[in-house]
Amino acid sequence: MAEYRGIDVSNWSGTIDWREVADSGIEAVIIQASEGTFYRDPYLQEFYDGARANNLKIGFYHFFNPGSSPTPVEQARYFVDTISGLHADIKLVLDLEQTGGLGNYELTNQAIEFLREVRRLSGLDVAVYTYTNFAQNNLYAGIGLEDYPLWIAQIDVNEPQANPIWGDKYAAWQYSDTGRVTGIDTNTDLDIFYDTIFLDDKKDIPGTRKEESKDRRVIYYRVEEGNTLSSIARRYGVSVKELERINGITNPNLIYPGEILKIYPKEKREERKSTRIKFYSTYIVKSGDTLSSIASKIHTTVDELVQLNDISNPNLIYPGEILKIPSVKRGPSKSVSNKQYIKTYTVRSGDTLYGIARRFNTTVEKLIELNGLSNPDLIYPGQVLKLESSGRVKDGEGFRDYYIVQKGDTLSKIAKRFNKTEDELLENNNILSGKEIYEGHVIRLN
Image (tube, rainbow, N blue to C red; front, top):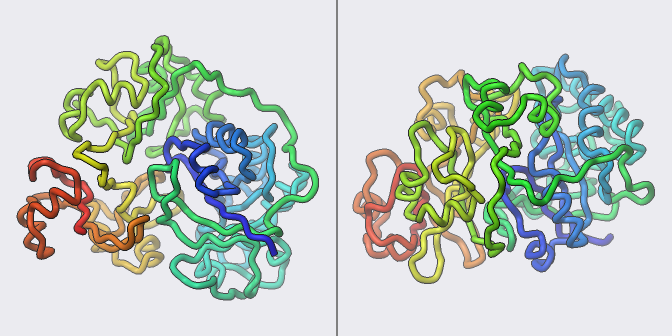
């Protein structure tokens, strides 16, 4: 059976150089399209255009929110509408990772109902994504889910374990969530796709899609607690109707903290050099921030931030706005970043801290301490939680140890804790002095 090198991506991947991805040997990509009936990935069109222009095989997935509302049929319609008019080479995928409080039988029935409706609406075949532990413990065998191809996730094993639904059969395998791919500046999910995950007949999803204008500046804004669609619209000088249209919002009174909105601000875009600046992380603008204070904090210049983020007015940034952050330059780049080396989890609808802790074999107490949570019952979709403060990962140069700077840390304390010298840490992290570390900074130890 033929194997294809693949990846799967979402908005957390940031801007991608798809030519570099294709040149690195990646042959196929599955892109997040939607979740529930409230979220459409703001990078969907950008990723689709880039992947298709570079001849990658393309697929799409929908993150499923089980329960009574929205119904499986409503979510299926939302998913197909989100990808209408696009071309698919890979079967349309249901991402099944949450129970929504349902029992195994009811959850499995809801998944089947979603898959049937997607196939009916799109005319395309469908598949299921889930992880091994979930398939072993949360799904019901023998009522039809086994009829759909499986894309299984199980990390750091030689091959996925069997489960009661599909046994040891699978059409695709996600084998890493910390992969490094040229052209993507964050950790990336790595996959092997087999023939049975690909479509073999009709490949165009019914409907039409209007391409985005290439000469309009785009801002990606993360919704904060207390935001309304009208207040966000006023900040950027756009209309609520425009935000609804761009982001596929059906209920303007229902937006969530952590949700990412795409915005076309009114000011004219300035002509800028097309040279691509590598970036290694992102920064969410906080109240009181200025571009100058951010540049000082992360050791870059206002001009570099302006160019990297295509900012027309450097005096006009807003809380919640997501900025790309360039690497610190100190000779040949060895810089590390939060997204590259911290093991994190993005909270999704229905998650609890207890459920996250159990899934990742940690404790609620550790998550509270690591993330500075004052109320463990108050987490929200889109929130990014750190799962560990230190550890070991494999990159292109071999295994590397890393540590996340905590409040009160100094370079000398870190060096002493890990039996290193300050000079070693300075060299490993491309920094000139211990003053250049800050809470949340990821320090490479070797």
